[in-house]
Length: 390
Image 1 (tube, one colour):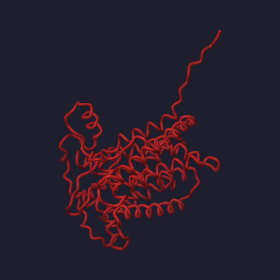
Image 2 (cartoon, one colour):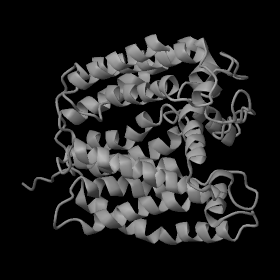
Image 3 (cartoon, helix red, strand yellow):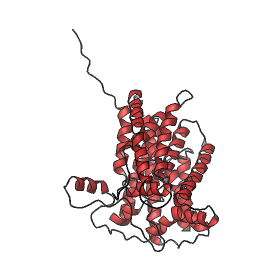
Image 4 (tube, one colour):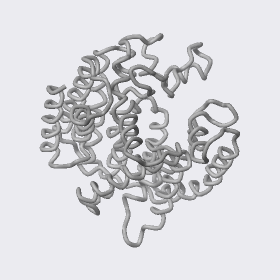
């Protein structure tokens, strides 16, 4: 493990320097997250099994290839696209967003009224994961993507006289995270906000650290009320192990190239579309991953899960290069001053931070496409033909 920690810390320093101290650059976020987790294994006395070669090699390949690919894309110069978003489209988004509020309220009331035992917070979370009335489908409404896109479009223009709608849309995005009791969505809201404010030079690195501390406290609070826990040293240690460390041990239990169908995890959206259209009898794999009970109990396996199951170590390398290059390309256009790419990168920040936990780049591809289209539409300029009268 020592050699991997050294490599990650070296890549962290390299990414920080080449990114001119931007803590939100893809290389910095990727290596910082994995370095923290590995150092936690090495330095803290947690009751976790030792990591095996499979996990260490997989993390090393992913972290190295992803970071180097992102840095290579950052080395190219890009001509900025000086496009500004349509205020009219953004305002239409806002009013449609307000009309969708009753849908979230209806879900919350139905979830609370469900027959499941437990606290209100637990009922809300279970309904978000398993659906209501035995549907066994995660709650993923269309309007959440609309709220995220609208929030980002308003947040980028935040000023003293343009704050009301930012607060309204931010409140809706946060409300969805609270109603579904999703720590990931609350983290997503926080990171998007911090990134855009940092880009606008409204906050500094010190404020980011304070904001992250507040986020961590908030996420712990969500976990406590969701599971009716008491905050003590034992529970704090168990929560840290569950949400930070167990994913690595779980990855050690996987068998490479063990997928039943070709690329069924990586190309899940293909199987979902073809099955829905009746073109294939193969059902898509569930986004809720199966539980493993030994050596630890968890159902998260780090970002490496789909690539390793489908294609083994070569899959880790190939998709680390592809995704790292893609995120590096987004980040480079953001640095070039492209407003649209700044919003896109703000949206993807949380995927970099949560790599230690699971893969969301391709697993949630359909949701990402919806948000990307909603962000893109205000920047599409339609030139109407001009009629010349003679």
